[in-house]
Every structure is written in C-alpha cells, then in structure tokens.
Image 1 (tube, rainbow, N blue to C red):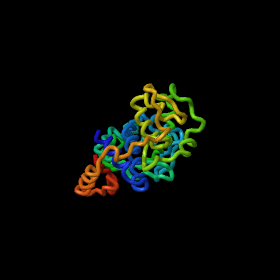
Image 2 (image 1 turned 30 degrees about the vertical axis):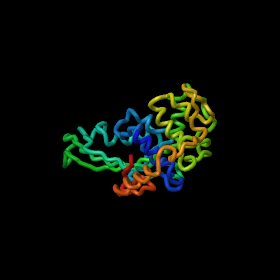
Image 3 (image 1 turned 90 degrees about the horizontal axis):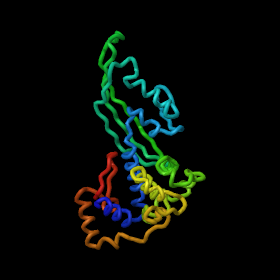
Image 4 (image 1 turned 180 degrees about the vertical axis):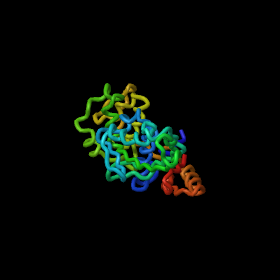
Length: 264
C-alpha cells in the first residue's frame, strides 16, 4: 500500500517533465528484479539472452547469441581446465541510467572471484583473485515483446504484426506520467506482473482485450488525480517529510549515487 500511495502522489502531483524519468527507471528495477541475472547461471542463458544479444570484451571482441556468450564465459568457470575451483566472493549491481533514445536500461555489475589454479600445470602461483566488471544493457520494449510473444502469454494473445514497431509508436507514459493508458509504461508494468501471474497478459495487448474480471487495461487513461486522494495538508506534510530527508519534494527520489532512494 505504501508504494501504491507513493506512485499516486509522485506521478499525479507533478508535471510530466519533472517526474517522467522515474517510471522507466522503476521499470528497469522491476524487470531486473524478476530477471535475477547471474552471469554464472548458464542454465538461464536462453532466458537472459536473445539471438541478437551480444557480449563485447575489450580484450577479445564481440560475441552474439546465447551459445557464443556461454562459450566465452566458460573460460572463467570451473569448466576451464586451468582452474581446479573458483568462488564468487562478492557481487554488487548498481543502476547506471535509462537511455530514452535507445529505450535501454543500463546496470553495472562488479564481481570479486577467487580461482584455484591446477597445480599440475606448474604455474608460479596456485591462487588468483580478480575483480571483474560487467555493464549490462537491456531494452524494455524487447522485454515487453518477449512476454507478449512468449509461452506465458501465447495462449491468450494473438501474435502482434510487429511488436517493436507498435511499441515505438506509443508514448512512454500518459498525462503527467500516468501509466494506466495506452502507453509503453503501462505495458512494462503489466509485462512484469504477467511473469508472475498470467492473468495480466490481456493488459499488454495492443487491441482492447478483457481479462478474467472483464476489465480492460492499458487502453484508456483514468481520471483519478492526487487531489482526489490527498488534502492540501497531506501534500504539505509530504513536502516537509521529503525536505527533512534531503530529497526534493518535486521529485521524491534521488539517483545521484547510482542507487535509488524513494519516498514511500
């Protein structure tokens, strides 16, 4: 309920130019959380990567597709005969930015590994500790299309003519940042929800499609405003609360250090 109220407050209260950046970033976090990306979990590579996904290593080059990526990641796993074992000591993942031009979410993953080198190889050292850095890019529109066309929703939705093109024709969000109308933002929200409960699949349809409760979503904006839910005194209390915590009440969030703080 706290998050629900926070979203109503921040998305409806302020002008679109001020609050627009928030929702795509929340979409990035929501998608990344459901993704559970782990570069060492190769059993999930077909889920993580598409046929046109690419991994670029500055030392060696660019590799396209899940299998090509897996082969080169194998070099730093126990499958490599050089290592007798390896251990992940630490991992930190930080949000970098949402690129509106490419519609890409960007995260930075920092890994700390320790490798035991096979003594039979006669190397000088048998223990090797290394810090790795991986920058992750994923496209939120491609994610929506994956859910739309994938096994989760395939039985409920007809394949779109050109999913990416239809999404490109939509606004990112609606009036003052609303995400209940015919927008990319609404479909990001319900695509994430559909991965947990397929009852949300009709909500990402490009054509109006009723769900099991006979409700149609992501087609027409509602009329509810923040003033329907909060009084002037409530909003004043919100401003004071934000300022006391070092946050701009016109934004309600802070991205300065690559992490995020939200008022909830």
